[in-house]
Length: 159
Image 1 (tube, rainbow, N blue to C red):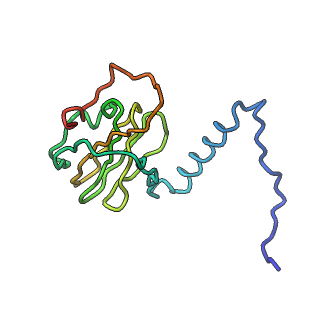
Image 2: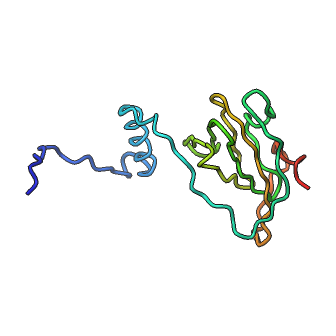
Image 3: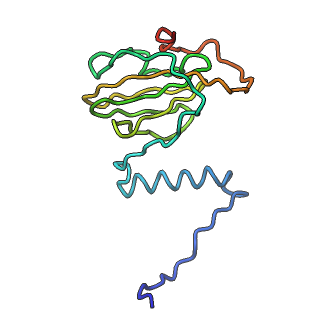
């Protein structure tokens, strides 16, 4: 039998009609809880996998906290129709999708897949060495509109 006491507390129900979009309210409450409970130090890793029919088309040289392309820490995209794989050799760095409110940690045990046509940037937080490998997906049948004005620093590493 459970010895926990139930608090006489009225549940906090979300009312999207009054408070707006329920998902926005939930996300705000989660972010507030993370900040209050000091959960912000918990690292978030990406678990996305590279599509199976990709072929490697190039990679950057070894980059570091002292030697990297300045475009990487600015809002940019991978080369057109190309996936990137951010691999940390030693240390760690952070990664942000510009359309999300989440910062991912990337280390040697947790690489990160960078999707085509999606703005992102790298956040260098300390000593790190890393590379970015580039892969072309050959079964991609999506006729997605490409952003022709996007900064794409990886283009010079594609064969």
